[in-house]
Length: 100
View 1 (tube, rainbow, N blue to C red):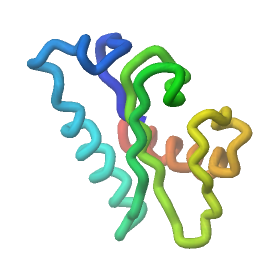
View 2 (view 1 turned 90 degrees about the horizontal axis):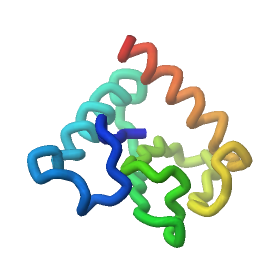
View 3 (view 1 turned 90 degrees about the vertical axis):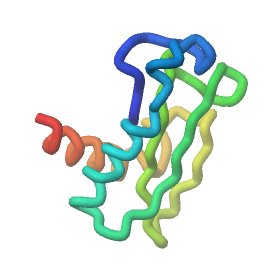
View 4 (view 1 turned 120 degrees about the vertical axis):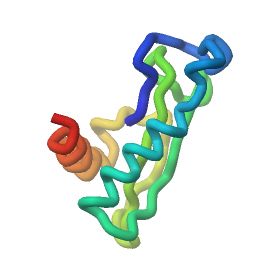
């Protein structure tokens, strides 16, 4: 997950000088590629409750994919109950190890 350092609930609330979320996404993908060469992934951004935003803070999900992962992206399903939750937890743990 990539998020803004300061709290913003909507993209249009971010001051223009802080709009470059793509740098955070790029850095995160670069870190992931160290552990997962040839990584393929989904990038998911939702704004508002109706499209599936469950945390009232701008954030982008990077979801690593494998050909046999059986991940179904259902943005309205609680991620803890999603088939992908274990894979996402493992990826989160690897990311943390690079950042600490």
